[in-house]
Picture 1: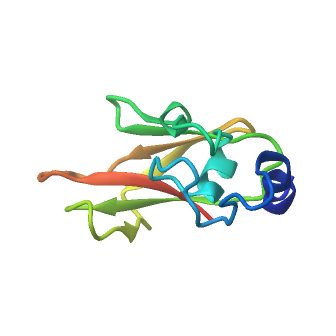
Picture 2: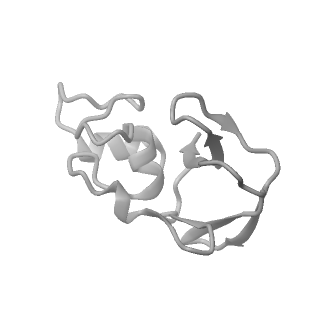
Length: 116
């Protein structure tokens, strides 16, 4: 299921349906909502990406979505950089992707998943 097909099923003509639009204003663009299977018309993306006390980031992956996911990190919530180390993939199953943060953290650090 590609993005264009999904968007055609979800949005009405004239609605903000571009991949970079954020129809529901929840901070997740439409492409990310497509990637994790959340409803772009409802603020529900927090149900599809979670982090636990073991510093594992769980990301739901609906079957057949044409996306890749990566982790980004920031010290200030303003400037994010793609992580190339400091994490491991714990699970890459068909329904979820789980990253575990392994980098040593001595100051506040923020993480986010990005769909491409």
